[in-house]
Length: 385
Image (cartoon, rainbow, N blue to C red):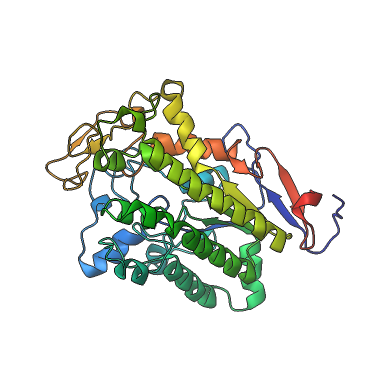
């Protein structure tokens, strides 16, 4: 690819270039994030404070490993987004509501709209089907509206908004997992849940379209985790039929096949979007396989416990939907870093660290971003680099 150092506007995108400190040398100035509890760095906890609602991530042992106090993150410590920010030399990404309410904080280095419990589909979609979301009414559409409100006050002209987004990584999710969680774990018919998938993919694609129109040029889109390895699903769908389980990992095969189906449709849609927007870098983050390597070879990554939750209410998988992690009836393990599962629905900091490592150093992104420095002007196609 040819480029001129004298070009007035040249976008230097250093996707990953690690040095001994573990930081990434690059030109990104911010992270703009959307999603659910896998990415929420404190929005739900602040939203619930104003409504006096209970949020389990507001109490210990959430946050105990790194922060030593609850931050609203659904883990014992940091999330994937935190490790991405660390690799870029950026601070932890401010939650939209936290940053908005504090005068000494700025969105200049990033903003996180992700809300624990959020869905891709609007709440009305679930209400019409008798599926409840007791966590929040927020959806991806809600987060996009917050994004638009923030941009209208944060940058005073459309050109400055575009400049901000062009120098940012946009992290689109993970989103869509809760759409399936609420349906599956409330007994909604499996065959009907399968019909949700194309609709959810279409919502994600529509959001990406909007963000590109606003000026986003580098978007990371994660797929879904292998839900068949989740203690919540393993407890709810527990069976004596051994053939339904992977003999190596103990995960439920049909649920992992469902996650793989979602991810396959998502990747097909991202291929279409890349053709539609050749000037935009759209990266698929393979959360599924980045996580599965931990289940397949746990000892290699320091794990002694895979599908049993570190913090929970007992039972074969230490998960009881009526006993929240952090409640008086729950128990918590002594060494979370030896567990993959934190509370039966979310992972430990140790697991998230390895997954982030697999994304940043490869090979769990498409296109692969390990060690690659892409210099791209507004009219440069990814295929030229």
